[in-house]
Length: 116
Image (tube, rainbow, N blue to C red; front, side, top):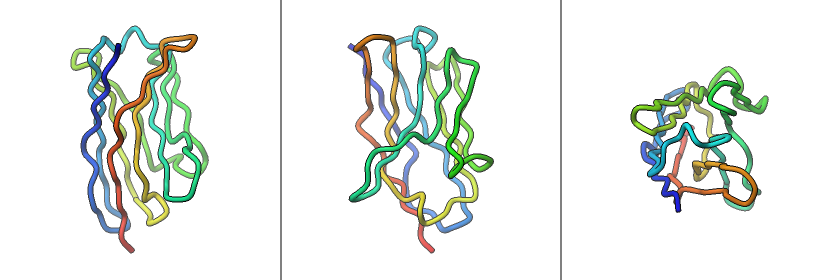
């Protein structure tokens, strides 16, 4: 079993920045991919950033250039640096770790609220 614990969410004004952290109970080097997703009220959960095999990072157009995913293997932690935040970035942000097959794990989520 893998536990993922997110932190770093909060309330920020538009144009501000936040850094989210996701601490894993298992070595993150073992994961095929790790990512961040978000879910706004009444909307489906969507991918925000994903890092594959510790190398390749993918971002949707909505956050490209503003969000950066990174990892610290020594701390078994993945980060999401969010800059130039917009009100539409308001959502609960979830950390995901995928080992393979059905081994797919989620954190409990952290709320990010961007005021205009």
